[in-house]
Every structure is written in C-alpha cells, then in structure tokens.
Image 1 (cartoon, one colour):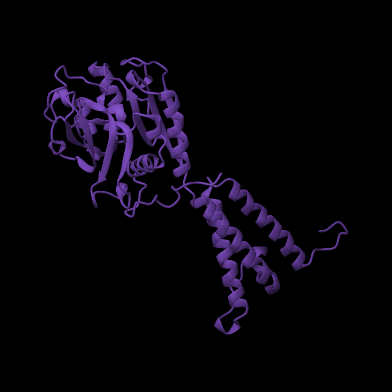
Image 2 (tube, one colour):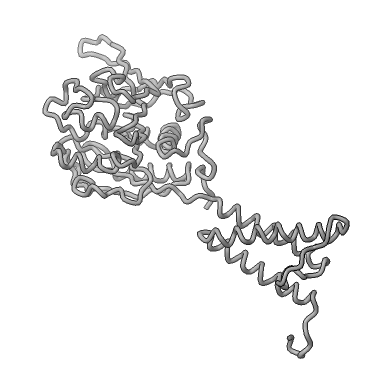
Length: 359
C-alpha cells in the first residue's frame, strides 16, 4: 500500500524494486569481498534480458510463471530495467576482478650503504610500477651484524607474497639465524635479492673459496643460486642482457651504469643446478701500474630454491642511490619481483591487474 491506501500499480512496484536492486548492486560494489552478491546480480540481469526476449517473441514459447513478483513485472518494466541492471552487474564484476595488491616485505639495514634513502626509493618506484604494497623491515644499524627481526623469528614473512632482501649482513654467521632467514623461502615465499644481500650470511669459514652447491657451507649461496665473495672498484658497468633468457628482460635495452661495484663470480654460476643467467656486467679496471683489464661477471639471474622450487630473482647492481633511482634499474627489479610472484606474462608485461594502479 502507498500512503493513500491505494494498492500500487505494477509499474510503481517495478520502480521500487528497481531502486532496491540498484542499491543492492551498489552495496555489492563497495563490498567486493562478497562475490556471491555480484554473481547473483549478474544472473538476475541475464534472466531479465531473457525475460524481455521471450516476452517480445511470443512464438518461441510461453514465459514460465514464477511466484516472485520480480518475474511478473510488465514487459515495459523489463525493457528499461534489464539493460540498466546488466550494466550495474558488469561494473560490479569488473571491480570484483581487480586483484588485491601483492604484499611485499623490504628488508634493509647494515653496513656500507644509504639504506635510509634507498628503502624509500625502492618503495616508491615499485609501487608506481606494479600493484604492490611495500612494507619496511629496517634497522638504522650500520654494522655488518644489523639486528633484524628476521634473524630471530622464522615466521617474519607471514602474510607476505614476496620478500626483498636488501640488507648487508656479512657477519651474521650463526647457522640458526641464517636458517631463520631462509625458512619462509623454504616454505615457498618468493624472494628478490639486491646488491649486498649476495655478501650476507657468510656461514662458512672458507666462504671466499668455491663451495660445493648443497654443502653445509653453501647454505645461503644455494638460496641465491650464485656465489660471490668480493667486488672491485667503483667504475661504470656495461650491462648486456642475454637474448631470450627470461620474460624479466624481454625488450630491455643494454645500458651502462654510473660508477658502481661489480661483484665477482667465484665459481661458474652454472654449478648451481637451477641458476639461469639473465645479464652480465663488464667493467674496465685500472691497475696501479696504469694498465687496464676487462672484468666480466653475471649480475642478473634467477634461481629455484628448495623442495618447493621457490622462485628467486637477484641482481648485484644497486650500490649507489643514483643507480637505485634509475628508472631502468627500477623497471628491472619490478619485473623480477612480478616474475618471482608468478605475475609476469611471457611478453614481459605484468599479469592482468598487477600493472601500475591509479590512486
């Protein structure tokens, strides 16, 4: 009944039902976690279109009788509500399809680098390039034994999709601490390793010598998929990508850094069974007597770690702030992160919904 006590007409009932349904769809769009509402909205919209078609094509059979008032609405009502409701349902479905951002834990701190600045450069650069949210685990400690929670708590990465290791912890050598750091990755959480992460967690006393993959001393190097023990002077590094090696480097152009540190490969990286080289770096080094020599190392690569074959992306680039803030560097790290998380297409583009987001 309306306020006058007169029963509403079918058109009035239809209008009221329309606004109620639109309200439900709008509410569903705001609460996209409840996908059942979106599915129901889509199915109702599709039925209304079918209802309209059958009503306007009588020779194709009678319209089924439904007890609900919704399905006894007049043909004129279905003609204008059906397209409207389908449009609302379509918008709701598009919103529901947008994936949640990847949660990324960025670990920084320790010796020899401007991590206070670089952590913010990386967070900003990654969040601008991909659908990710970067959280910090940072210590201002400048020693080679930075006190990071990851050293003591093996569950430090709980709830995260990817961990970025950008710490410099060369003298964290306690086996239990190293295993704590590795625990999330043994359990399948992907990893990205930057620069001094390659010179951290030197568990073996003879870390400067080639260590057999799978041996006790190679604990951290098995995770990285490469063993590096030192770096040369800061000189420009000419980066050469390996053609066709990975979607991570697809269509990326070779470039030369400012003065940077070239990390060595103490043994052929192919000694690690799941290592794949993506780029090499060549540096011209001048000796004290004035002669020069060319030094070359693998500087970008991927690995699969442990029984779960966890994806690991690494690059030894990134000593100086200018390099870390270079768009080419940030593009490379972003692609490596997405690849590690399984969100990079074969053409080198982010998977649907994981590209840059407008806020």
